[in-house]
Structure formats: C-alpha cells, structure tokens
Image (cartoon, rainbow, N blue to C red; front, side, top):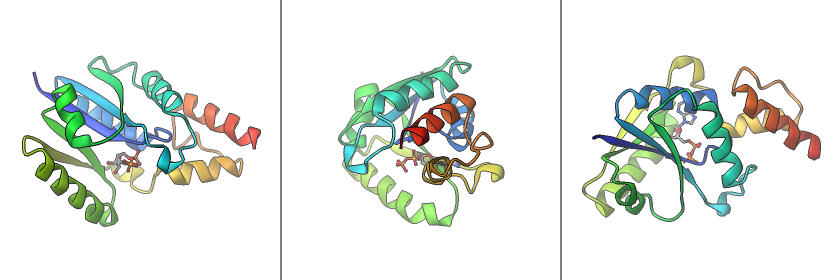
Amino acid sequence: MKIGLYPGSFDPITFGHLDIIERSARLFDKLYIGVLNNNAKHPMFTVEERAALIKEVTKHIPNVEVSFFSGLLAEYVDVIGADAIIRGLRAVTDFEYEIQIAQMNHELNSRVDTIYLTTSTEYAYLSSSIVKEIAMYHGEVTKFVPEAVAFKLKEKANKR
Ligand code: ADP
C-alpha cells in the first residue's frame, strides 16, 4: 500500500490545496493530510478548526485522512509510514524554498522523497494569506475557498 503525506498549515484550506489533494489522492492508496501545529506562525484558525474544515471539504474522497503533527516532518513521515511527501508548486518563487526543505528532509531521513504537483493554472495566484486578507476586509472569498471555509472566515472577520 502506497501512502502519501501532504503537509502544510492549511490556514485555511483553499481550492488550491483541494486541487492538490484530489489529484494526489488518485496517486496513492492512502493520503494523509498533515496539519502543522506551529503556533510560531500565529495562525488565524486553531489546528482543530483547520482540521475540521479539511475533514468537511474532503469527505467526498474516501482515501484521505486528516492528521496533526508538530516537530520534524522528516520524523513524522516514519510515524505514519508515508512513502512520499507531496507539495504544491505555484510559481518559481515557491521553488527556492521548497527545494531547500526537500533536500533537508532527505538529508534527515534518506527514505523519504518529496513529490511536487504543479498547481492548476486557475489557482496559481491563490494563497491562504491573500484569502485571509480579503476576508478581513469583508471581501467575497467564495471563488477561492469552499463554502464552509468562507463561512468561518466571515465569522472571524465579524469578530474583529
Ligand atoms: P506551508 O505553510 O507549509 O507553506 P500552506 O498551507 O500554505 O503551508 O501550503 C501547503 C502546500 O500547499 C504547499 O506545498 C503549497 O505550495 C501548496 N499550495 C498552497 N496554495 C496552493 C495553490 N493555490 N495551488 C497549489 N498548491 C498550493
């Protein structure tokens, strides 16, 4: 059984992430979405809120499981027995950072390789930070995130 791990902050999940999830779920028997629990990044949503949203919007994909991790990705890969890490590449600007992380992870755990899926062009401009910024100014985000996520973003914006 081939197991993939798609790690990230997912603060919150967007259609760009969902596209990568749907495509990589077809490449692996099982796909773990590893939600990074890292408060140093000052996320808008707690790790539980982020995981609940991911579960909600991926419930149509049977081989996807949502999990949490903190600490080293290179070690977490062994905890769940993943064969590969999946990351999305939007533009060349992602590349420099991503290659550094992938090489370091391989150095720390030589069993693990990282596979990149290039983003579908309609989502190339999309990032969680931009979506959060639009939502905080009460802009419309339903084109960028699933409905359940747009609803939660509106709640956060109204609380400010
Ligand atoms: P991180 O904080 O680890 O960068 P993100 O949640 O921002 O986490 O992203 C997780 C992964 O999803 C990364 O590989 C990122 O490149 C990818 N990703 C983010 N937005 C998009 C998008 N619009 N299209 C494709 N991949 C994306």
